[in-house]
Amino acid sequence: MLETREVPIDPFIAFEHRIAEACVNGRHDEVIRLLDERFIAVGFHGYEFDRRTYIDVLQKGSIFHSVKLRQATVLRNESTVVVTGLTEVDWTRAGVRASGPVRFTKVWTKRPQGWLILHLHVSDARVGEAWSQASKKP
Picture 1 (spheres, rainbow, N blue to C red):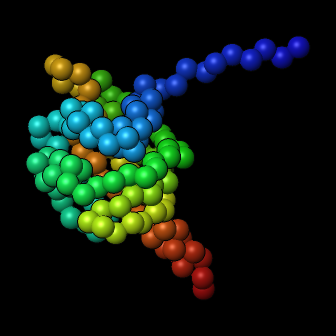
Picture 2 (cartoon, helix red, strand yellow):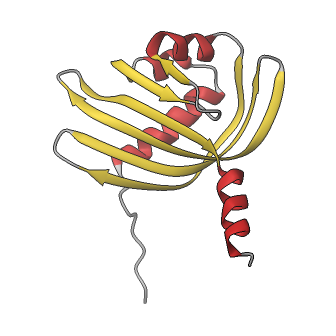
């Protein structure tokens, strides 16, 4: 007879699930508390956001209808953790609704108050898929 048992989930993947849930439920304050004071993000079009600008984008006009984590990889060091992954996102920003696969890289840093997000980079995953297909053609 086969035994089944729960496999413990990596705490940083659990963080990703909680962040996604907080975004969908409009609890942006939970995400903001996780941002290091030195936080920098790079958005879809290469625009760099400092912490204040990123918070403004979250709080003023970003509505997340769904965020689903599809894949994640966690790389660890003593004081740094890098999480790369793929999410399916459906959101509205500045009145425009968009959805699709999003690749992300998130860098966490260990601070006296706990683990905080130092850097976030997001890309539309369809661009990578198109590039991959194009590179296969003669």
